[in-house]
Image 1: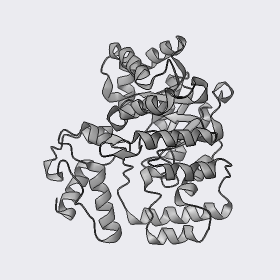
Image 2: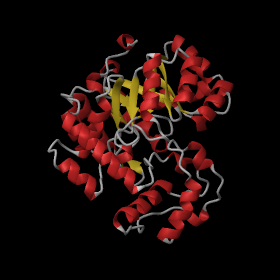
Image 3: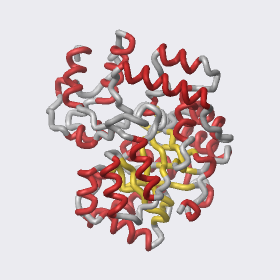
Length: 365
């Protein structure tokens, strides 16, 4: 199956969900430099979605990439996201809007976004998969896939129901590898069983595997093997079924660092693997909130509470004993209506309403 895919160069992709910002707007000049540097280094895979950065991600794709390079220079993935349609009739107009926003005539990959047991029921009720397959037959989608956040059992059900699915995008990193909530490796094994290549998202878990506690950092410092990010990304890329690893890079420096070690990829050595296992144990012992900062929750919160920012502050307090909340705007934890919309959309399946009580109590907000 992989042989019919467009050639994703060097197994590494540019995830356009965490682009550089100036205030609340994407930094277009810096993003353009990042796109140029990425392509110049021999990479070609880009990933976006309609809701990323409040719609700005697709616009940045058009401004920085598709309007400046011929179509055969890049591979582009987009997604059908749950909160932008309620009926089958709404899917085609949304898809056309996505094509126009990105400035292309087709998507190389189109994913049913953030599939879980409950979302799969909606997508099947709305015949989303059938509509996407029709679009594929029309040449507007080259390959159909899913991104997924649920158990191996649910994934097996979806891949059995729709064998036409060609690729699965999974959250996969060394912390979630055997986590009983995320079950990254269990889902990976289901993909292997069905012969589906994997695209990896969150290899550094929203940046939380970059900034490590001192005890964990000492372990990696002893390796002299490169940055924390490089170890995390190389871990994910080292599995044979993982066809591409995405990184959401928020500045040119991050991009240059990542392409430097992925240009000539080498899997982790036995010594590096052992160090990763040690660091995993340290992180598990800290009991931090495993939020990746995807900000899906903030898109649906009626009180505009900056949930990921508050969780990051609480993690800082648990890790260091103090936290700076002075720069956090928006709604306060006490404004929470306990509606549960955030929990319905959270890929990490966090008990956000309960954690808001902890934030309010421990940070005094």
